[in-house]
Image 1 (cartoon, helix red, strand yellow):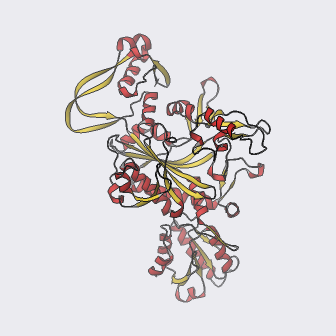
Image 2 (cartoon, one colour):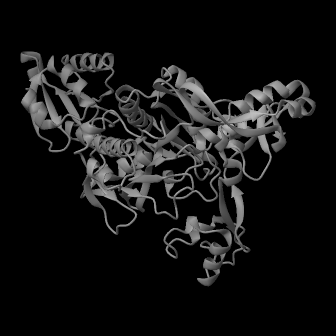
Image 3 (cartoon, one colour):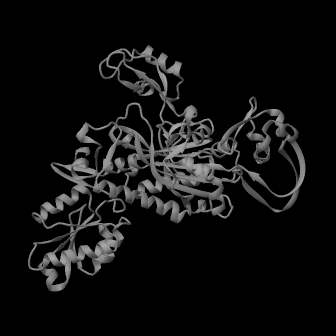
Length: 562
């Protein structure tokens, strides 16, 4: 399948003439078109249907962003090096099969496991060193000389949406829930990329961040899909079970309606674009592998030649992300929960100690006081001084500069730090899974059974022979497809059988042949990729038919239409 993908222009190793670079791949004409189709259908669901707001943020970010998010401290893998050949490997990869979740082990535990099982270098069988911590982010410098700032290439697109919460909230008419999406590239300095496009150093993501009220984790359209069935593998089960979305929430298999809705939407997306339902599942994270801030997390996994591979993660991340940036930046990133009518309540508030702030911070005292007043008590550190970013500078604020006081106020609402539901899609892995599930070979004949939604070429048009005006009719028809936005392929080379075979190999759903009968009665032959069955339809009908191919129309529907 990978050989076909390279030969026909889906995907191939980058910089091949220089020996290639592990973890970097190029998309060819068919691959780039297919990637666009996947991303655009995802936008149809999230941006058009669910009304999420799409933004696009830089790949490069200052160090402070990743200090706040925890990436500088926590976004690491344990690496071991061979004493003999000097190659490096992820320690948890060497422990696969020796522990259920080796990536959750601490450094000492992982090293003891490797020693116990006498694990050696997989390349030369040499001895390996003890694991050391390796940060996966690419570091760079923004600007020159002393005025430059440390920067990092983003390892995910999510932080751009978290730091922009206030703007997203305003553009969403200051209501929760409000969602944002981003489609774009991220970079991770993987220690030992492997399994082709399944582990890359530069990769494509489609991420959504749903900012939601912490006490109201519902979704308006949940009831519409409550009876939909999906394949779930809960963390207390040994095998996947088919269950309705409503039942999963009722039994607390999935913790809340909003999370369940986007678990279902992920299932719908993957099956709509053509993944085999029998080879995908939604697996719940075990408690030992779940992030400390997550209340629930599900992975969409596909069964591929490498085993079960994660394609999408859908998590309830609590308030961790927004709180982290609020605390680190000092900027108010809360939402306002308005009451039906004003009422008197008792509140704990952070009160600046102005007599202490003035002498200590002088001209910055007012900015520090404003940042403190915007905070909630639960954002204060328990056993350390508070650190905030004030006017681009990190400021340490001693405990004596503020206090938590209880006040009674008549208020029209309260500030809340939104929680986040995050569906995170790996585009490259999804494309690989589509090719894997679509690839069918019978003898020497290869047919790529791609769904019409994602197939790079929607329809191919052939003149039976390139003379007598047949080529002119076929060319005109192909040009009409282009004006409709349908990617059409014109081919007049070789026999009709060979042309059909070329299109079957790249997954083109239908082919149209212009023949001598076309000149007589205006009809053409439409041939189905799956069955090789053919029907006649009027040339004028091809335009409306082609417009429907992107929705995954079946050949039976074509026949009913004619």
